[in-house]
Image (cartoon, rainbow, N blue to C red; front, side):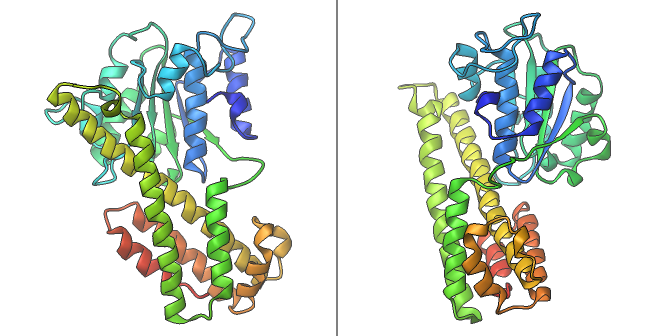
Length: 349
């Protein structure tokens, strides 16, 4: 993922200017509504710093973008570079835990302190990416803070968060904050297609509890398809599919990592699908206030107007609050079906 491959993201230009001036910070907090875009930017910076065949360079020969082709770029994309570590929330508790930061008997093979406090395997940058950094539990956050305060030279922390308010103030204050957003479409094609189906089905519904259960069924069917697609993709990329007869201890480790990776990616994409629905419900609220010219998804204007005519501005605003609460609930250990059922069945549509 090169900077040149990203959509129109102003944060990418800021990072490239920092590289050009040799003023890259030691820690960045990337925030925004689209977690996928945050990860793409983190990968672009990580690949650029390690790229051995950069298409653009500074006058001192430092890379300004990644080639996507060299061994370093490919290994980073495959999550197989020894000097790059990505931490994700535990698949069950949805937390980044202490055992992922410092060595414990139950720790995974690679932890953050090992990366930070040992010499870089290939002599370059050591980079730790904390995906959903707001999921650091208190013990992990305090342990991470010690590394963040005094990192070794050529160590870079990239914290990604769609909810930075949950991070410790002491962590936020030690990071350079970059808000990441696309100047073009606020959602990807898959999320937009889903929002279109949901919006048009809602516009045609007759209202009432039965209609809302139908909408819930539409969402659950989409999420089931999404999880199946993610599992197929992750299994194909897993080391389990690339080695014929690995040792049993590696099989167990790779299987745990596979399941955690599937869950993390599923939760990320689920949040983005619900964010697309939030954008449409925002448009419905604006339509109830006669402010359709501010719509984020003008292509859904017919469905937006149909629903706006049935509800009041107060109902529309309440819908937005309900969906925001559902998003927060889904970040906890509450059962997914219960959270979605409670959230969607209370919408006024």
